[in-house]
Length: 166
Figure 1 (tube, rainbow, N blue to C red):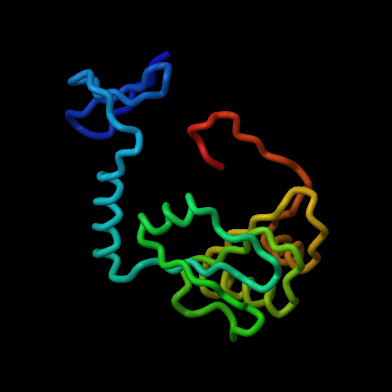
Figure 2 (spheres, one colour):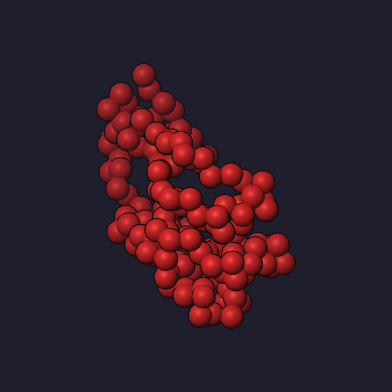
C-alpha cells in the first residue's frame, strides 16, 4: 500500500510499504530524520512570537524525568524547559505556557492542586498530567482533573504503529 502526502504546491511525496518517504517527482528516498523544514518553521515561529514558550515540569513528588527524545524534541521547537517546585512557589510562574506533572509517585498537596486549577481557569494555561498505570490513588490530582470533567482510569492505551506517538 502506498500513502500519498502533498505537503505543498509542486511537491509530491509518497511512502512505500516499508514506510520510507520517497519524493514522487524524482523517485529518490527522503531521509526520515530530515528535520530542516520543521527546524526552519519552528525558528520563524520563535522569532515572530517574541518569546519562547516555557514548560514547567513539577518536581517534589517523585516525578519521572522527561525522556531524552521528548527533551530533544522540545528543544528543537524552542521550548524553555524548567523545573517547578510548586509547593515552595507562590503559584505557577507568570511566564508559564504549560505545566507538566509527569507520573508523580506521591499525591500533590491541596495548595498545589489549587495553584494548577487557578492557572487553568484564570490564566487560560495548559496542564499535562501523566500517570502510571496501576499507580496508587492520588486524591488531589483526581479532584483537580474532576474539576475539568476528567477522570483517571486504570486503563492502558496501546499504539501499535511504531511511527506514531500518543
